[in-house]
Length: 227
Image (tube, rainbow, N blue to C red; front, side, top):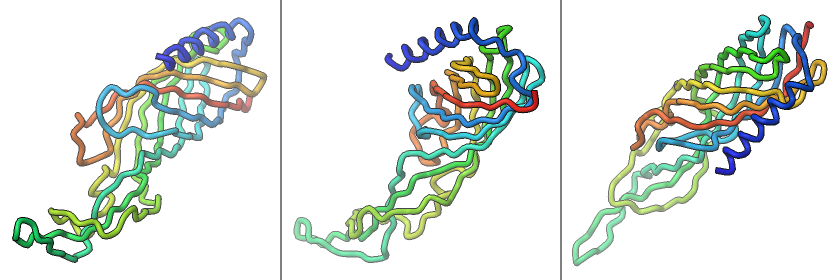
């Protein structure tokens, strides 16, 4: 509930700022840095943490078209691999085989490429509608960690597991929201954007529905060029 209060406060604050900053021509080319996070999740599944994104937009009056590149990190994912060894333990007078395994973990990561449209509503250009789609590409770069060695399991896991066996190589997400200028000074402004996002669950072996709806908050700093 506190998150919704924060979003409402930002919305009211953004509307009040409209009366103070009338910037009809912020810049033909806009570059910036945004940070997004999901503060509410409505279906089971994996969602990323903080998402930093470098963005750029081309202004066509009230309408702007833009894109960017960002980095998504998910919570650590753990899995077992079998070492090839088997040990036997006596249980109830009978030998029972156990498979000696290693517990491993890594943080799944994706490169995110968002494409978006924004339409500014108010004459001061400080309130805007936002719609976008993001294409995410799996990154194999994050290093793997060994959490525990010598685990004895009743069932044998695979000896070798590729990460693309666990996570989708590509996913998509869709976003709609309303943004506000929190501060505007000549070629510089701060923005906030609450939104709703529908994304594909990147995890292959999941009990969730495959699509996840979240409420997201984005803060950004932008610079306008070529007035």
